[in-house]
Image 1: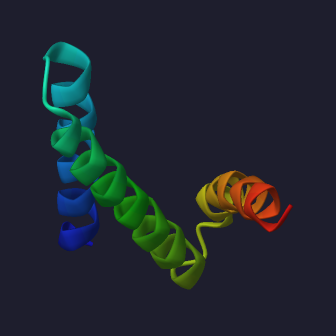
Image 2: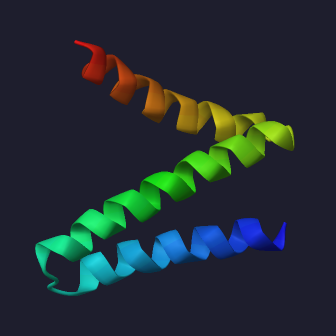
Length: 71
């Protein structure tokens, strides 16, 4: 459980840094990867721990993205 909070905190820290500062483009690329990986990991953990509400929210977000990519 402790690692889940750590991953969420890292993702939130990247998002806050992006909102509060001016960074080079490479920072935003790294931020997108980190936040995406954190979201997928948290969604998988929520399914494993039967936290279905969080899983449904992430599934809806990822599902729409996958539909857009398949077009």
